[in-house]
Image 1 (tube, one colour):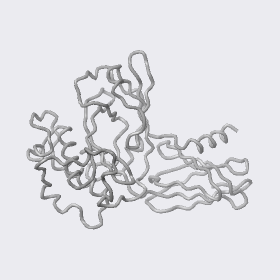
Image 2 (cartoon, one colour):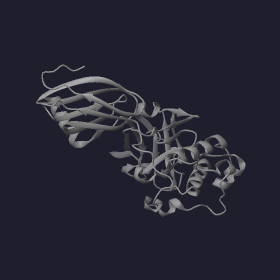
Image 3 (tube, one colour):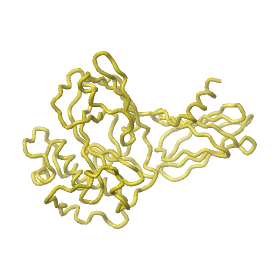
Length: 325
């Protein structure tokens, strides 16, 4: 009975997240944390007398489709500054042919982030100007300079982009960091970090309001972390890249019990719940081992399966009194 109630609650509530971090921040920094959803990351604060625990949650799924390029209406991004190209900004010769015929907006974003990752050496002691033009000319820069360059190149390619300011927290403490976000039309905003990832970043990344980085990070600590889905993403030229398409899992209900409630548990612990008549469909699943639990005609059953590559997988779910596999 408890499992059945859990299935129904999840089906109504949507997703229980896999990747999760709990980061304690003192009061001064807690005031700069903005709760809610940002580029697929859900942020919530739990107040404490001396600060707050910030909970960061994300369900990692493949992008459902390759966003078209050029973007039909980039001004719909909702941030007018995200299309402002710096004066005198020139696209380097290596990207002059961007994009090749048939590239999607995500392909363009990945190529830009890869270019900055390979071309610009990360040097946190670099004392030169950190604007994109200066960093490109020197071939080195701090995290802020690399983020500024990637954002400038994306804007020059008519993809809205902006710099994100915040901290990254590890087991040995926190440090100030800057990364970026790009808007890909119907896909919405995605995060990226030159040298790290395209499509999303780890839940160790905590965005903060304001541009100042003067506040002390003493007392910031990582209390809990699960980033299995992020660490399981494919790596291309040193970048973790979110796949496009993924696997569509179509679960067919038994003919005599068409009303179905199903729960899919991913390799990282992420859970997706669906209710349907005749079938339930899970879209954008990453490759890996899954467990599906479903309830029909008042009875619960389960089976394990492995998803690979992309495309559609159809699974017939046994009904009441039938054997699962």
